[in-house]
Amino acid sequence: MKTCALIPTYNNVSTIRDVVSRTLAYLPVIVVADGSSDGTLEVVQGMSDANLTIVSYPVNRGKGYALKQGFLKAKELGYTHVVTLDADGQHYPEDLPLFLEANRRNPGALIIGKRQGLEKMVRSKGSKFANAFSNFWFCVQTWIPLADTQTGYRLYPLHSLPALSLIPSRYEAELALLVLSAWRGVPLVNQEVRVYYPSAEERVSHFRPLPDFGRISVLNVILCTLALVYGWPRTLLRGLFRFLKTWVILLSYLLVMALLVVPCVFLYLKCGKVTEKKKDKLHDMIYRIIRMATSFLGFFGNPFSVSRRTEEDFSRPAVIICNHQSQLDLLAMLSLTPKLVILTADWVQHNPLYGFIIRAADFLPASKGLDTIAPRLQELVDKGYSVVVFPESTRSTEGRIGRFHQGAFYLSERLGIDILPVLLYGPGKALPKHGRIIRSWPIRTVVDPRISRQELLQYGDNYKAQASSLRKYYQSRYSEIADQIEQKRV
Image (cartoon, rainbow, N blue to C red; front, side):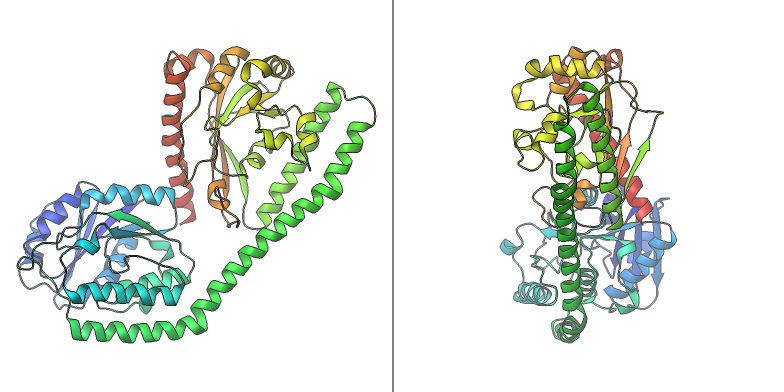
């Protein structure tokens, strides 16, 4: 992602240099000098740094206006994401990597910096009331509970911002940005951050209780009215569409499996002896059915695609290792080639609907132990089949790459075949672990270059070291792929 930091400032001469210099250690910075009259602009102009951009105007227009000018400048400079933080020193620029990591795990989301220990801080009654007041009305307007709607430490995806003409120009702008983004369906994600509250004598605040509370109250009246006629109906329709989409896909799957696939495969296997040639044709049938299933999902907003960094055609057997995020992972893998066998869990083997197909296709249970199933795997490899292993063993969450187990590397040595890395991006976004609703999200399968037995020694001289090194490789590559795909989506 091309991300910058945005720091709106009004009369923060004592803190602005420190905040900007610390932020520049992590990201390029846009400073919007909102009509400062205490020398703040001169301090920033005296900081010579190629990654510092200054926007200024002579008259104070309010934080909302400053944010809008900063967003426009960021778009003009080609940035896709903006992290906003205050110029008074309350926010720690050292927490910026937390936002970048949260963005990788939740692409397209608005990341909200939830201030740690806020309830224990010594704050004015007005500040405590303002936060509680804002949290309550935000929940009413969006049906989303948030613990800290008043924080200015946020990461905004610029392509998902609401129309800037709808955003007020003063203090209440940040609440409006949250509400309008929620109504548009932008995911809101909390990220805990530190906060520094100086003593009352040192604290610089431009909050004016009477006029600012008045504007917030007027804004909440407007937003509650809009929630009735726009926000709530749109949220309901969006949820209803996702629910219906999921049920249409699920019922279609059950009907096709129960009425077409299972009976046809059953008759095919029962008519005559089950030979190796018949099993090969069964694999081809599974491949074609899966290809049709992925096309069907693409029609509903989950397009499957494959990219290769090499001329891989799966003609040579390999141990294919793949990250594991979702129940959709199997569809992505089985749509690559018919010459695959997958090590599965016991519940898959004994599934009452399709378990007999899994067993007939020699998708072997990993629970039996690699030494037990290795002879049959060797026979399949000799026939040109590759073996798919999910080295994490279980589905990970939030796009993380979990700890790799050593079994895949043992099999590579035992069977005398290469390691073939395959990375999946998107299944965990479309149908995450523990998820019940399918979201529209592209699913990309990336086939990386093979790693020969000799090359594998460069990753470590034992299975444990190889598993650890390949996990780091997957973490790095997954971040690259996520950034590339999200850049195109923007």
